[in-house]
Image 1 (cartoon, rainbow, N blue to C red):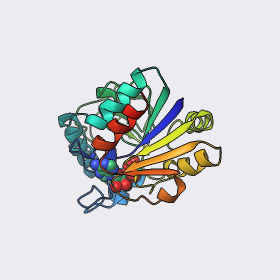
Image 2 (image 1 turned 30 degrees about the horizontal axis):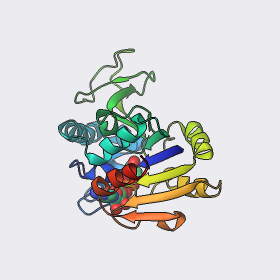
Image 3 (image 1 turned 60 degrees about the vertical axis):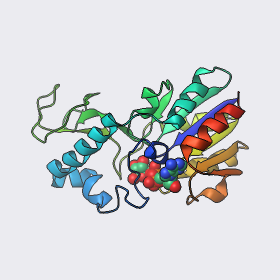
Image 4 (image 1 turned 90 degrees about the horizontal axis):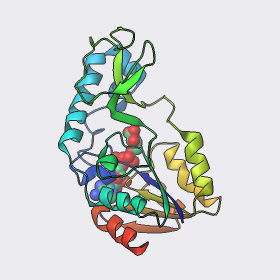
Length: 227
Ligand code: APR
């Protein structure tokens, strides 16, 4: 079977990384427009960089959980062709051993330059004065997709949805497009859809099947069913 798995912040919640919209989430007490837009970065780069520096530290202190490990095991089993599309900017899928991971919102462990467009691996704290290693300009930012910017690899993702036999969404609230539209896109192409979430999402009604509970319980159980 060809399986496309879409993950959101909920798959990393049990690794201790806050989600965005659950109580105590990142957007409680912060406004996305103050921290996760190009305008916010132009207005106050130090504030935005501090926000991402704190998140990067939390990612580096976190460990992949049983859900990440189960998906990596499924991918490695070769019994099915599995592509993981994640909205998350953490590297917990990769650290669990996953190989084919599409980061449609970029990665907090990479940096890019707003002056020359260079991009590179960067696991260090960033400062507004940091010079770009390519052009030397103090224009370094996290290589993540902010609100108002285009998500990555959409052609690849749409093609994978069309070819999939199964679309599984894990731990996402269905709040942000285009990811929130993938389930409907899959369904209208006759692809079976499953949602794994600890609560109802904004697009739960678009899934043929729902499994409600924690990702660390439900994802390993689902992967075991496929063996
Ligand atoms: N197990 C399963 N699901 C969980 C768990 C868990 N342990 N904990 C939380 N969830 C679910 C919540 O029920 C919710 O549906 O994860 C989802 C988290 O939703 P959001 O915080 O909105 O995160 P996400 O859907 O990934 O946000 C999408 O919004 O702010 C932007 O770029 C950001 O990529 C992010 C995008």
